[in-house]
Image (cartoon, rainbow, N blue to C red; front, side, top):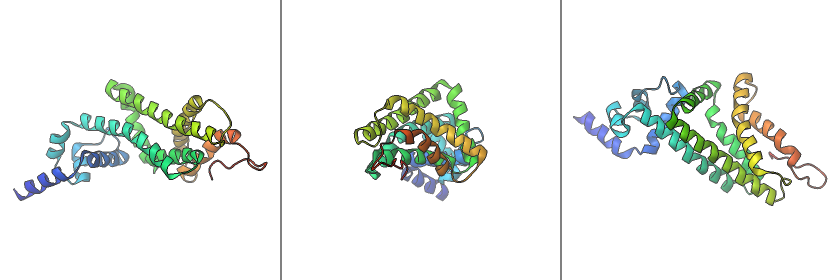
Length: 211
């Protein structure tokens, strides 16, 4: 009875956001296929039955992870914009923040396994489409600001945002294969290759977009 009471207390104090974060950590270690409710419950310090009562099934829990990821994208862009006076620097910071899923090549592989679900399950794919659109919208807003601020030459921010969003995933995958240096440095170099020709020179010298 004492154990049951303790678990009931934790269930009331742990928010859905905390449980979803715990699930994301387990996905990074095990991948979505190997993950079980028991693994997540252990990570969160709950009984598996409590997690089942809260979300109903592993599939529903994973859907909540996907839904939270979509919401988190807008929050990520808002944070990096608030942290940098320069919208150009904020673009680099946003790309590096997205690299958190690639703390190790193994973690990236486990997160990419989620993509298999996104591509085959209509409910997950719907959320993946929204996440993709939110990512492009975040980059597009920063690019538009960078153009208005005179940091970038006039260009099509919508098309460039799409390129950066594609670069983000492809560059992380290439890093996981090559494993040369930190993933953030790899991403920064690739992004600089794309943006440097568009950076407005100052005093006759091209601006370093990542500094």
